[in-house]
Structures are given as C-alpha cells and as structure tokens.
Length: 48
Image (cartoon, rainbow, N blue to C red; front, side):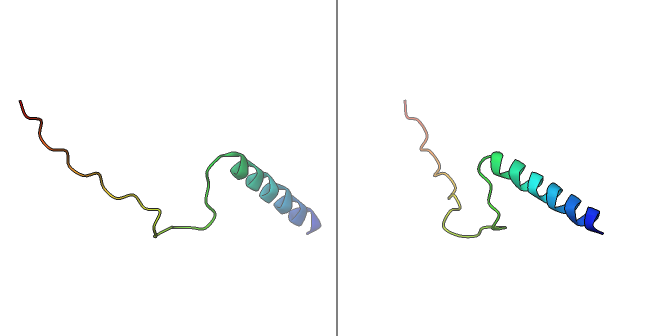
C-alpha cells in the first residue's frame, strides 16, 4: 500500500513539473469571460 502511495506522489509530482515547464497553462478549467477574443472586423474592399 505504501509503495502505491509513493508511486502516485512521484508520478503526480513529475506530471506537475512537466506541466509547469510547458509554458502558458491554466489549471482553472474552461474560461468564459473577458479574455475571449472578438472576431475581426471585415475589411472594406479596395478601391481602384
């Protein structure tokens, strides 16, 4: 039983280390707020 617990702690620690080294991650789940990007405005056609 102790071996399973130790293995879990080691693997969880390794996973968190790899995630933290991975760059821009969010552990907060799905975000629905101000951070979402609005679609780009349509460009006016070029006049000759």
